Length: 226
Image (cartoon, rainbow, N blue to C red; front, side):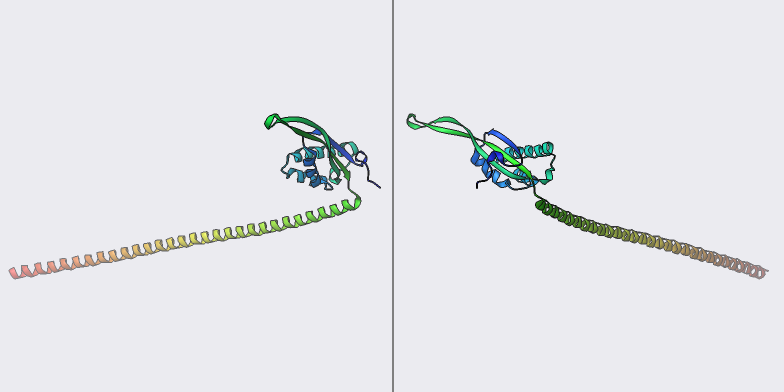
């Protein structure tokens, strides 16, 4: 028993008619997205470096939009159930060759059809389980990165606090040294004042002694003269 005909396959479709891309080249790109999820198929087409991928991505987006707006389906539950490229008209052109001959040029075109359908419940459940597992792994990675960031932030704050304490301690030591130097200077000044006072007293005593000696000598001279 043969499968369903091309125009009888279930699902929501979008058709691009008379595309200037040859059917052989379009089929190479369509083979990449057949059976894939709609999101995954769009990613594959965006990363495929071929001109046919650009046209087919537009057809895929149109099919998904038709399913969402016309049949009230969820875009995340869709997958590419069928996609194919049929031969379209071929333009005949001629190229001159040697000895007056000509060679035929065939400019081929195709009709591109993309059909999207809703995934079955088992596949949806498996896909949701994978998505939940990915989200859980991502949440763990985010929590771990935040924990590392918090630890690094705490270490940074702790180091900054230690540096601030060290700076304050150094400033306090400098202030203490400066106060000690000031006290030493004051003590030296006081000692110098005491020493200078003692010298002044000694000088006064010497002056008094000299004056007394001079007075005694003058008395002896007067007595001798008498």
